[in-house]
Image 1 (cartoon, rainbow, N blue to C red):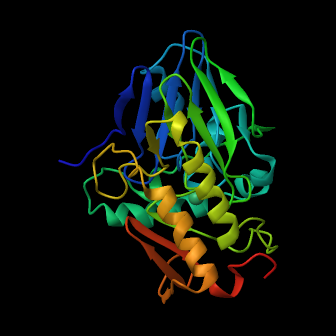
Image 2: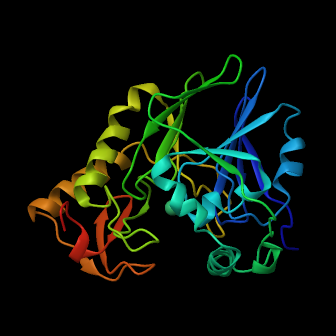
Length: 283
Ligand SMILES: [Zn+2]
């Protein structure tokens, strides 16, 4: 029988990882007074009602970045925090792009989920977008969430550190399939979407490692894999070193990426997909 509800795991006390049918992972962090939802998924189920099953607290909403699979469900909230550099990206997400993404990933799951692209919810309103920047802190009552800027995958990429639980939520900044899109939806060059930009972000995540024990990306439980495992500890270092070696020519890339990206560079726990014609600063 196919799975008809999002799968949720309490990964630390009061911290929930919600697997949105293999498409992406949302995180709910609860304190004594408030809760914080990190990312809204693609938007294929009644997210506010689902959150009420996990906490009675008022919920603030923040995004790691403005892509379809993280901002897609933001229409069911009044106010959403994200980095201003991703406002345009988040506002360019449409029901069509959400359906397209859902179809692509649900196919990978091989029918284990009772979810289809037709489940994409249509929202009548858009939330008010509120700016987040490095150094901002969500005080949830005994639980603090610190905001760090980790651009590259998108210009406004953010990571969230759950201070007391020593958990980092790093979105798509640096994961086993890191994608560098050279252009923004309006056709302009995406700032930081370079090997130099990704190396800087990967080294930053690595440098933060004394503050966290676990690093979860935005696609925990991807496709048909039902698991709630953090990223390998060495992954940020591996990404940074690959970028450095691609820049110097010590490492080579091969043809064959995805989502319009034509090159792949490999590191021990994954790969970076990019466009070789636009992968360096200034290109
Ligand atoms: Zn993304």
